[in-house]
Amino acid sequence: MTKPSPTQPRAVPEPATWDARLARRLVTPLVGTRVTPNHLTSLRLLIGVAGAYYLSLGQFWLCTAGALLIALSNFVDHTDGELARISGQSSRIGHLYDLGCDAVVTVLLFVGLGFYVGVHHPAMLVPAEWLGAIAGVAVALIFFLRMRIESMVGKSGTKQASLAGFETEDVLYLLPLVTVLNGMTPFLVAAAIGAPLFAAWCVMDYQRVTRDVARAAQAANGKVPPKDTDGNDFQTAR
Image (cartoon, rainbow, N blue to C red; front, side):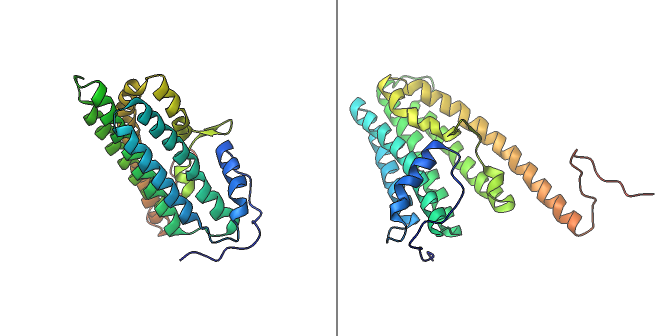
């Protein structure tokens, strides 16, 4: 259930990234209105699905339009969270809905990209549609594992690396440029290689977090000694 929205924005820390800062300024007038964070999440989903569809059609200008929609969808993805924070409407269900929409849009992006490349390069050693599917499945696994990690250790366990106000996902803002420069094929190949590798890293990270949580639970029950900051077990005095 959505929490009632205050009429004035709440004082919360400034976002670390540039797009989130812009998103906050754009959604601030929505505080106290009927617009909820879930409305913006749904808008992000619709824009992203439309973008992925246009990518899949195989025509250059439609693909370019699709890439622009994907970039816009990536930006709108920041608006729901910012509205939730400044209006006090954050909720577990809303957060899960946001993550689910992120996964759907990203998976469809690579699947659509695979169809586009397949139209223009039908004789690739590995069919482009397969490459898109590989990247899409890997991304789906990444999102699933991140959700599991977050459920165990909180959002800090899945926080993206940022540098100079930019996050890893901001590479999607370059997608229209990649399209115009006819770089979709190498982009797809890179995704088909990079996404599974990152998924493998997420699997190892998930296993590490699972072990740490289990060890912490056992330590709390007095079954095993906790680890110190250097990763060594505290030894009981003899």
